[in-house]
Structures are given as structure tokens and as C-alpha cells.
Amino acid sequence: PELVRAAELVVVNRFELESLPEPPRLTALTLGADGAVLLEDGSEVARARSPRVEAVDGTAAGDAFTACLVVSRLEGREWREALERACTAGAIAASRPGAQPSLPTADELDAMLAAGALILGSVAFSQRAK
Image (cartoon, rainbow, N blue to C red; front, side):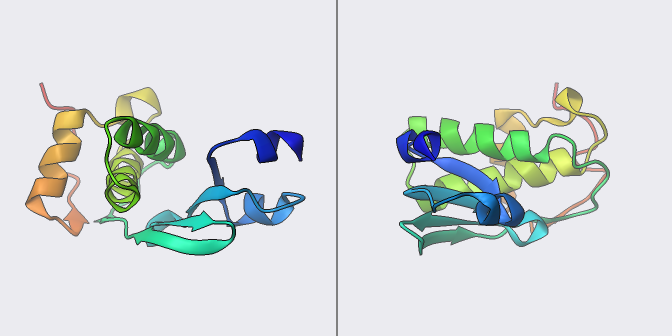
């Protein structure tokens, strides 16, 4: 409980949230293919959808989500945009096999967001940008 209280942000899925002894002050609740929700003191303050992908391997999807969320905030982005970017990063990672090789580059993430794509084809993003 002390660690949860001390954290500025806790990133969890539904099952992890239910297992916590008390709700964190600020929670990024991941919903898989349904995106993510930001909760402040248990109330929703932002929500983002994930692009639809053909899931190949979800091994690094959570890591991609969390890393992108934190980096986006450090870059000064608002929570809504940070969540959208994080959901997109997680979706790209889930569309590729492996862990580290599946993590998208910043350029890939920006290209996907700029295209406004709702469907990520395995051909367009099957390999890392050079």
C-alpha cells in the first residue's frame, strides 16, 4: 500500500487494479484492444482507443505502452494525447513478433498517428523503419 501511495502514476490492467489494497491517486488502466483510461482518484479523466491490429505477439505491448506514456508526458504532452500515443505504441508492438524487436520507433509511431489509421496492416508496419 505504501508504494502505491508514493507512486505518481500506476499503470495496471483490470485484474491488477482489482488486486490493489486501495486505488492509486493516478492510474493508467490498460484495456488491451479497447485502449486505456486515465483515472484520478477513481474517476475517469481521459480515454483513448487503440488502433485495430492483427495481434501477433503481445509480449512487449505493455512495455511499449508504459514507456510511450511516460516519454509523452516528459515531452510535455497532455494526458489525452499521451494515452493515444501509448495505445498506438502498444498496438504496433502487439502486431509484431518478439519483445525488443517489436517496439516501435518514434518515427513509426508519428507516422501511424499522422495517418490517422484505425487498422494497422501487417505489411505496412511489419519491419522497423530504417
